[in-house]
Image (tube, rainbow, N blue to C red):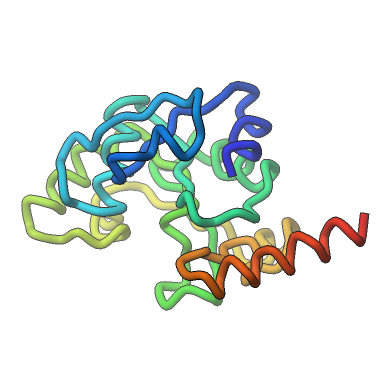
Length: 170
């Protein structure tokens, strides 16, 4: 994931993580503590936009998101505050942990947190949101692979199978 972000941006990105040992995961990346502790993924998004102004945020456990998709998401910030890909694999129909967020998201996220809403999409009604259509997402690959999360040992095994299959097809 870090390699795709680096390729998409042309520089090593800052890593925003909730885990206190995040610096050990990938040495050499800047790690910022959450600006509001204990808010999960939404706290990470808030930290990113309040630190950088605009950011492409990707969950650390999504290993198959390509740089071209990240560039597409970032490019949409020219006309929206949130650029989020559609996905049939998510119960929400979108992937908020693989999206681009602009500066207007900071105040909107803080307002959502003040309401007690910690959902990663809980602030969307207060900002301009553009969805990257599912048909366009498909140009980058199968959404079930692109947005696959490695959360358990069996997920890691599946990810390794996908990696081997990709390597053998090249």
